[in-house]
Image (cartoon, rainbow, N blue to C red; front, side, top):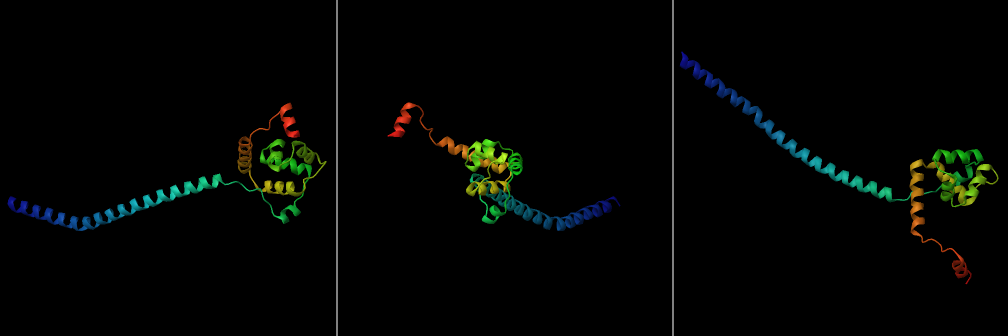
Length: 166
């Protein structure tokens, strides 16, 4: 009887291995193909990430435009309080607003006190500033600062004045 038990046990093991192989072989093929797909997807994602990073760098290099349409400029209202609140909202000083608008600090002060109102191109710049946030304004100021650094400083003193007169 012991021999018969051994034979039956061996046969059961053999049949069980065969059934497991029937199920496992297709699954291993599927796993292998899925691994290949995952590899391809990772490769594609890395390419897309590199492309997105280069696009971000290109966007960062672009200058933020200070433009507004004629309709927006015509519809815009200006008051000393609005001028001051715009400046505070953007987190800039009168000097920085003057740099952005291309005027003197005194002109900005007069806008905020109500003695004068911005006109023409200056009005257009201020309307455009209303659309921007703090980061954009900081970026523009940084660009303007770089432009100033690139220009050589004007010579000062008696010799420079004489040279300018000639």
